Image (cartoon, rainbow, N blue to C red; front, side):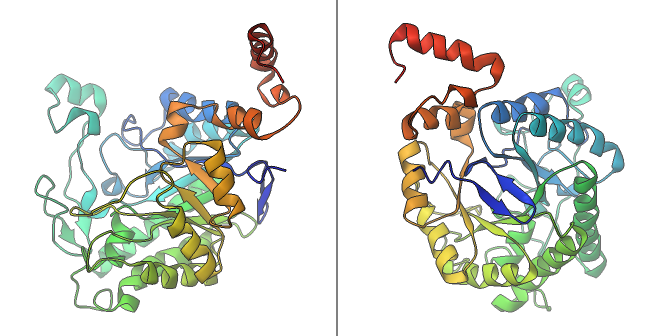
Length: 372
């Protein structure tokens, strides 16, 4: 029996299997609005058999976007195109999730494949180019190529917290089954958590308890605004991979608090700050998910260079995590769950394909003599 293809339930959401799609920024929106690119990009994962598809980091305020090309959910007009995506995912057998995010001092960054801000004036018009001054826990830039942010005061903290709450309500209106609070990868909530970025000397800086204060305030407010029958996940960087930064012990304490608030699963990633030494390799973050799962007593998702069905099965079977999240591997193979079924399950798995494709793939495999 395959653990990967067993169901998993979180509050009122039941996943048909344990292969999910992690949020992946596409840098392809104009003024925060989803369009046909996002529909096709995300919809193909439902066709490919994933049980849950999570929309990319979605800015809860305009200045919270990672780039001018990132999605937003700070105004009601942004609900309808996201609702269209959620409905497509539902019609094709997947649950729909969305990651609510604020980039903090890593906002207003360049589009990755451009290598910098080299847009022509004509491109700026067609791409919806915008620029702004980021905000952060402290007035310290992420790295030399980023602007110096403004430190958030009490009014700014309230504005950000209210932005998360309002975005959660809009996500519900758009029909999403779950939300994921982005507290990883060196973005705003992670910036508050980490001594690498948080240099405050007030109640939101200094001790680990103080550094957790604002992320937990946001987490409580969001959980209270999100329907109780719908699950809320949170993504964290379990370690900064920097001496003096966030440690596994810090993240276990944070995850324990999140569980008490009512978060249903911790999506365990790592890193995000300049200067990190990340030991990347196959399944390299699975032990981090295991540490949080066992020590905080909360379900986890493992993510990061999990590429093979056997690896996913091993992580689940060893009790390191409850879900397997794919990102770049899903981009490379949107049909990854369907291919994994052929590897891990016995019998005819072609019925799990969309009806428009399953019969044709079966006939192709019969012609090649590879049908079991």
